[in-house]
Image (tube, rainbow, N blue to C red):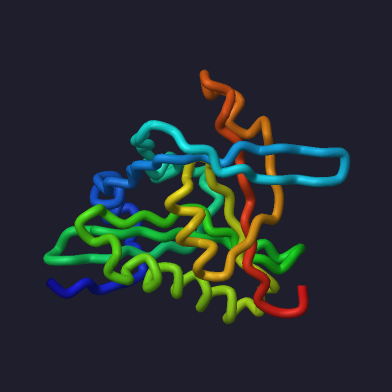
Length: 178
């Protein structure tokens, strides 16, 4: 089954994007240890935990991304990526990247991410930047294999989390002279 990637057509593609299964299972999270001038992530095993995500800003006037692509197989949307460009610091922000489970581990995430890097090249961006949860251990490993590294942490970003263990981790991949 061939998968084609194309520019998202909004609002027509919104129902298909909303159906994406963006969940993942993790058996670890990254505990955040903060010192006076240091930051350390400690990978901590946990019982298998399923985290579900969705495109929370789909169809919203206030969404911050302005370019999106979808992966389509047999007429169904099976992947999605969205980004924005911040001119003041010359970076591309990756807001969403999701692939339906049956299509994972086939290079589709790389193909979607390539659209973000193509935008960064067009804009002559200095880096690509994104935020993810410290519970997204599988995603963090995937990003690190693609050259992203830890750029910061926000310990209050998920303050509504009842376990108070979820933190926002910021990752960056420098592209040129940043």
